[in-house]
Length: 211
Image (cartoon, rainbow, N blue to C red; front, side, top):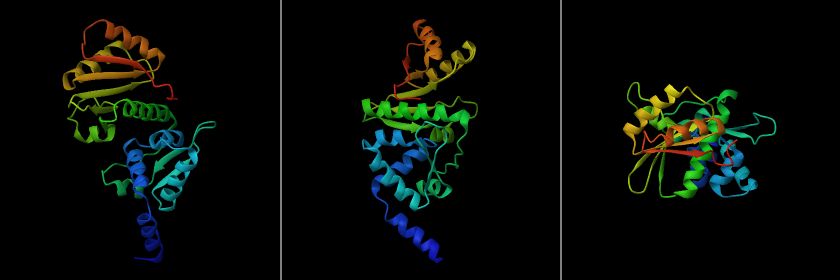
């Protein structure tokens, strides 16, 4: 091992347990904004910056300014993904997906704040476990009593037939299907919920911090 490799390993050995928890969370979610990590750690920006400085120094994350006026994004490097050991691929931020990733992050934080005993199963794990042809939920939550909740985050209006097909499938595989929606899809999903066709369907507005 060369001098640079030894130095890199020393930096990683100096990481705190909380640093590694942040790295794992960000890998599960593809990436995250720095303001979302403030919520995750229940800490001010300066504390988050210290955590990120250590992770960057160890070569495990990159911090990027992607959109003007928005908090920076934290994206795991190839080494960071390998360090987590889940077999995930490296995520490359795309403008078309940032809003959805951010909204799913906010929903995960929202659920964790209200049901801290629950377990979040990220989309990346669901992808590895799904059967061919199954719809991939944006996440799943295992509640303290063992009930499984499919989480869908909807920012745009889909065709009614497509939405009904997704709900039909998820309602057959999960105890509850819970949608978090932007205003347009919230109206559409609300109508479907009020129809009574899916007793285990829930519809919520996006958490206020979602952007």
